[in-house]
Amino acid sequence: MSTLTVRIDSELRNELKKISEAEHVAVSDLVRESLRKYVMLKKFRGLRNTVLPLAEAEGYLTDEDVFGNIP
Image (cartoon, rainbow, N blue to C red; front, side):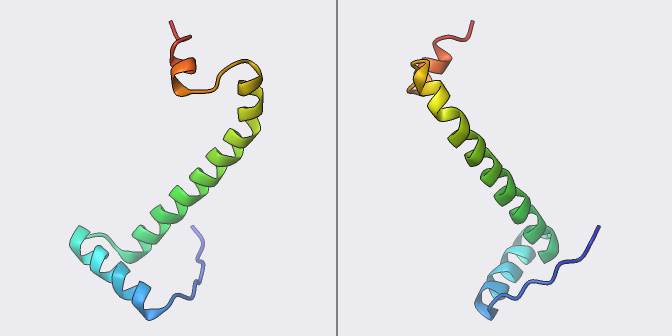
């Protein structure tokens, strides 16, 4: 595992400390999990933006369209 230094304001640091104490989790674990979720969300949105035009061209406009074709 590598180390990354990030500068944050004291207000955000205090909020992280409060959450850390309430959840009994290290601040670094909270930040790591937050970054992991952010990266996954960015990847998902990128994939969605790539696939969406293809799906629309095939007539898949809503979730119901997709689920209606699953056996």
